[in-house]
Length: 445
Image (tube, rainbow, N blue to C red; front, side, top):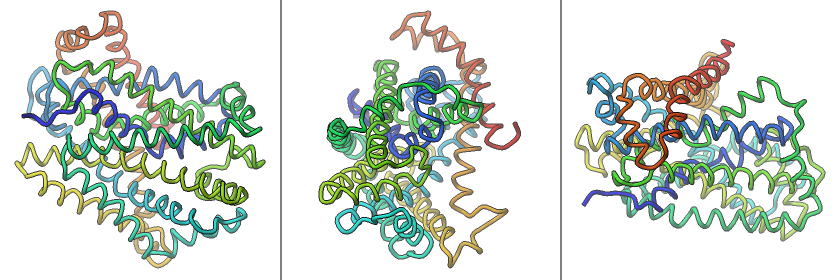
């Protein structure tokens, strides 16, 4: 029997892939930097017209081919040209992302345990504690990275049904319950109305080209696009499953969690009189200080918040390694165990290099052309490999796949009008938008 997702399993797994640190950590601080409501509206439009379009593109390739990423491109192309196997480079961006993602999840795990003790009471102490962790405490970072990597490897060893689907059936509802609990608590704060106003009242003076590109980038990367995860998960959907409906549900869940996280975090920030534009340090510096001032209740909220981040991160981390596993299993006849050991070893060792590159002891030897290894991994994946993968996917479907095949697949689930809109977006609008983002990130425009 083929190792297929159930429909609910696919939705939870794909949502788990999409819902990660980008929703709960990055979305709130980027929203804060660009003034709230106007940015949120632009972000929602970007999700609708860009993110969901590319999500459907990856889903249709995966479900149609029912294979690994490289083989899926070959099978779906008009010519069945074997050179499309080189499109399989997409899978390696996920493995590289997982390398430093595991390190960041390790930091968050550290804050789960820290929350049981004494949280820093001021920004200087919080900043110093975080700086000490990443620049000096090599042993702790390696231990936490090992725990996260070990958890990911353990889950994927179990396979699609018993591993990935099962963990998402557990963690995604738990994540939702924790966030709902935090949201209900934020309702009781006087600052909730201020947070609501900040998130949904547009201040158009804050919107410039940088804000538009940030919204596009956030919409694109929050849905786990360009790493082969959605293509790989969709390949484990039954052929007759309604991938369009499932994709829309995933996009709604992903967006709802980002908005919820924003409301929670801004309620906390405004209650404490803190700045909305706290930047990347928001989670590791600003929030622990706020939680510290709330006594025992603050500890409970802190533990809940950081546990939610770990859950969100684990479900995303699992999705980043699965495309590589499927590639080695299907194209090189590896057993799942052998593929997991190989890919797990690669991302674990790269993670060690990434965390060492930020420490005082090793940063000089692991810095190249002005960037340390951690920053290079982040830059190469988010600014080069993932945008290129998305551009390739759009061009592939628009110009190298039989339109009639796509029309037949889509119109089994949606109207011809919806298909035509999607096809126009994928062939013309979305590639231009992503190329603009790509060139901007490289500093060309």
